[in-house]
Structure formats: structure tokens, C-alpha cells
Image (tube, rainbow, N blue to C red; front, top):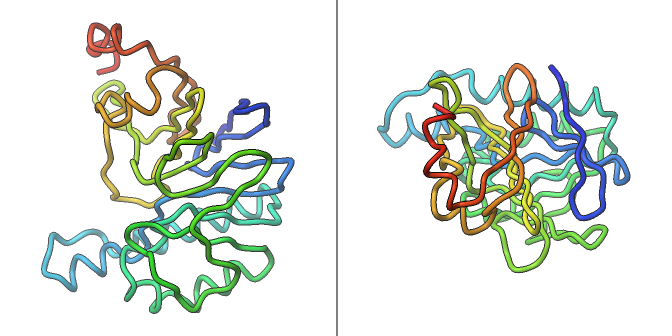
Length: 221
């Protein structure tokens, strides 16, 4: 996997091809929207069946990212679990994975309640003048929630969106769906800037201003 360095609000970051964000000065690995236990939750509620390995694959990828970056602080930007039942059923696995790092769990709309997990839980976190939260707000922030994607060569791929005020992470979990970067919700937050495509390798692309985006839409397909 290749990874790309960039700056946001005067800080150096590394976008990893896995969809995780590394913040060197804070020794922090930041992930969003793991949605652990999604396949279990959908099966439990009689929904469409997903491959049962999605939780295991996500946790293995997270373990690799923690080891390779040697992060001292793991920050999860909400929706770590798909629901409260998944949070409790996976508590022991998460405890083992996070045994060597400080952990901050930011509350998301899928996992707003407390769970028996290592580390601290918070509504948001403030570091170096940047707010880390689940949903984008009014100040400079790093968020998740929207699961941004971009279409390239017929594939919809998760992307980091980097604007002047907001840095939005892709969903780290598998089978999470997402919003196209041209969706009005994301266009309002990041009207122009850069996108970093994740997958086999990280690739940076400029985002055209909204007036040009619709005219160039076919180019990304």
C-alpha cells in the first residue's frame, strides 16, 4: 500500500491507503465509521446478509495500521460499532487490540451510548486547534459520518475529502455504503479542495469547484 502526506490547518497528516489517517505530531491514528458487527446486526434484524468476515477483516486491518504507524493514540470518530449489542459482544476483542495504545472513542449516531471499552469516551476532542468529532460542525474539524466516495473507471471508491475547513475521512469498515463526493451535502462542506482515493494505493485528485463539477462528472466514471 502507498500512503500520501498532506497538510490541513498547518498540520502534517498521512492518508493511509487503508482509509486511516495518521497524525505524526500527535502520534495518533484516526479512523471513522468502522461499523463493527454490521453483518451480525443485519442478520439479527432479518436484513440482507453480508459476508460474516467483515468485522474480522476490519480489525485485522486496524491492527496492521497501528503496528506500522507505531501510534500511541487511537482516535475513533464515531460509529465504531453498528449498534450497542455489537459494542458489547466485541468488547473483549477491542480490549486486546487496544492494549498498547491510548484510545479515545468519539460518540457517533450508531454508538452514542457508553460501552465497556478501554480508554476514554467523548462527544468530541480538541487538538492543535482542530476539533475531532463525528459530524462536521462550524469550526475547523476532522470528521467521519458521511462515508465519502468517488467514481473512477466504473468503481465507487472511498476517499478522504480535504477542504479549507473540513477534513472528512472515508468509512474504515467494509460494506458501509456512502455518499458521492458530488452529493449536495458534501459539496456544501467541501465545495473545492482535494480528494485522496483509498484502496490498493492512495491517489490524490483535485476537486473542481461546484460550477465545474457537473460538467466534468463523466471524466471520473
